[in-house]
Length: 303
Image 1 (tube, rainbow, N blue to C red):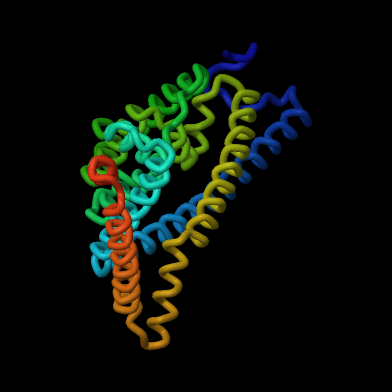
Image 2: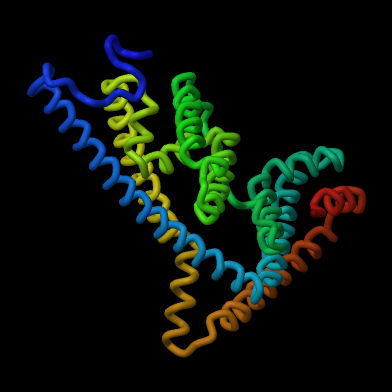
């Protein structure tokens, strides 16, 4: 809503405003500088975070290519062993439980383990959509919807290819316009704001009053600081993740002249053999059960 006496896009102070206008203008300049500094810091953190994610992703792919099948086989047999243990525990308390009920209770007890195994299988197979977490954007408020439309219209006028006479500039604007259209369709206000911040003049023209503009700058400062904190938190989580620890072990072994992936392969094979022996022991234990009970248990524990 426009303040009384302000015209859309009119940002020239009158002489009658004197010192007060000077202070307001200085406050705007301070906020603009703060936003630019924070945006640069956010961009730096975002690049660092993206580089670390890419580095860990490349290592994960190399690791799975080398020992992924062994990892899946080991987790599968571990899950089988756990299902047998839970099945014995339940069948000892309720020996007359029907097969499907027994299977359901085993599944409930090991629900998280089963989900983790399914994700591992898909991850190793390269189905990244099954294990990557996608952040869902919150719905925009009516005020944010209005700002989204304003920013889009101003930027569309500024970067519309049909308004460019130079062929090279026209091609550049076609790329930018495609990006603007994609951001607008996705209701990505943050993305439009980042593009708009490159031109203070464009941003100022979006707002109906100086007060509204200052409020937007203050909001941007808060949001950028929060975004920086989130990126720093994500960086710390990535650095301390199991995958990062595994990669450090790999790098240390490489510096020492050892073949880490071969060592891991041998270690996984040894663990698999241990689980196989335990599974054989559980099968022997099941042979001591009455035949009808044993058959129900065998059907219930199958993956």
